[in-house]
Length: 119
Image (cartoon, helix red, strand yellow):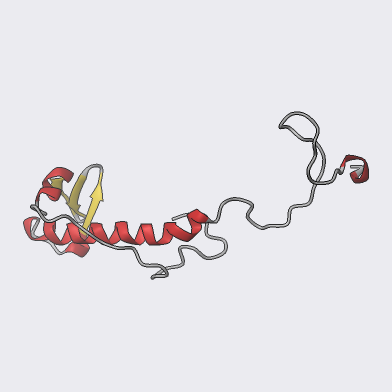
């Protein structure tokens, strides 16, 4: 590999953006840490909002919110997919009251621990 020949100090001033040589990585994850810091609370907010929508749709579908799922543009009863509302119909049940939730971090589940690559 001839590391000594290929190594160069930081701040290489040679022209162009492409640099050639060898270095040493000092981090487990070299990318941004922002996504890991905010994705957990964003995911939790989305789940909480969906649960509020399910609470409005459940009586119309003669089911409990826990038995509903959102699939392919509809809210439906998991055990009987023929009992469903379109996404627009389900959202219409909210009336003039918007769904407002705030994601919490930390929260349940291990969404931002070492070794977790997404949600």
